[in-house]
Image 1 (cartoon, rainbow, N blue to C red):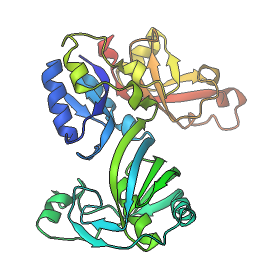
Image 2 (image 1 turned 30 degrees about the vertical axis):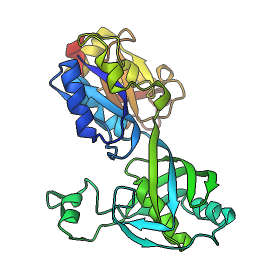
Image 3 (image 1 turned 60 degrees about the vertical axis):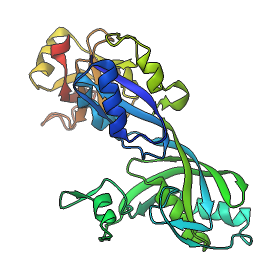
Image 4 (image 1 turned 45 degrees about the vertical axis):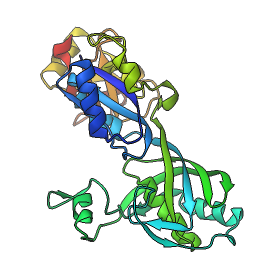
Length: 309
């Protein structure tokens, strides 16, 4: 089975727990996920089956949506409700205006220092393993983008929020940083990943629902071609398919892509089965200044699935 599932991860499950459960339910040996979700969090986890695991990088890059609660006045050693309390503070003087100003300060392109309790590795060892040993190591800031960070409601000491951000953003670190900016400290009390790209939690499948579907069905989730609907599509000829199947680039008229600016495209013969995922590359050498050549686009395959056709 080569499918993409959008699972509504339950609280208390690690992403690897979900993968193991899906593997048993679907009787599929090769299963992976595209983007870790903390055990305490719930919501959208993209799970890839069979040859769809080769598409992970494209889903990891998608924008993530979240909804959750920040608890002001309490810091923890994990930056969320699962950790040990490190400090407490009076928040009676914190106003909604101050909270909204603090939230606004984190919107846009910024840098974030990853938390010690994370799956990032130092010399092959996950940081959370070092944290359990009581070790704290220096972590370099990483660029992130927070497109939206909105206050939905304030019922002190809790703030409900909504967020849209780039890959690699630690929401609990954002919560802790907001608390620091307000001078009272904070931690992430609850979190739901509401979306990964076009995939929304309202349309996600629970593990119990998945267990009730016959293991060999192709009716669950999305085909690889459907799941990449966020990419522009190009229908290729059989001759172009042959070239792609051996790793060769193809050249197409620009009009076949329309006005879509994305770097990656999905390629198919019939609009249902994925032949390959391709990337736009520079125009052929010698074409500079050639008006006809400028209307052509070269596409280099980066993932080829022609053998599935």
